[in-house]
Length: 253
Image (cartoon, rainbow, N blue to C red):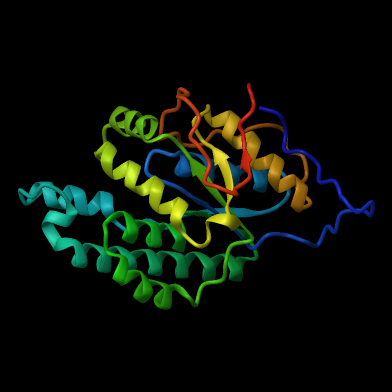
């Protein structure tokens, strides 16, 4: 993968080297590569002179899934009920985001968010709990919007393949398709930077870095930094972007 590109000002003036993002969020359905990309981005930004910290803002679904199976239940929703699951998930994710923002602010580091508030709103919609979204939005309103939110858009079939390959949990392809539709239906969707996440991790990382270099003074690093890969890639066909949304396509390696 190419080094992190140097920022270029589009106005003809030198880049404002004091302009730094406070938070960058990566959102998308399970199997889209959020964890892989967020780890990689935090490492690359730090290596390039912009100290950053990875934060996993999970809602506890994997842990709840394991607990449900141990108790003989099919899944977390079967264990807690839809309302109970959405409540527990919302509280756990809120606490995780609050911790990440507070600690990153105190340490003066960029917070690279693996999931953010939009993930909770999409989860509520995918589970059919629309009336609870108003409550969740009031609950999460305290959090500022990230400087950039990348939506990793992946075909449900490809996401399903990756999840089955890693073998740590399971999602039905129907739920993954519902989750894709939920993200695309969010009012925040037009402000997302949509990245085609069907390609290899290196291609997706390059697309993310290209966008960041257009907005922030990202300095070159010596190359990619190894990070955990928990979502396996080979490309499937490209997902179709929502109407009116500009897509960042991944480029060939």
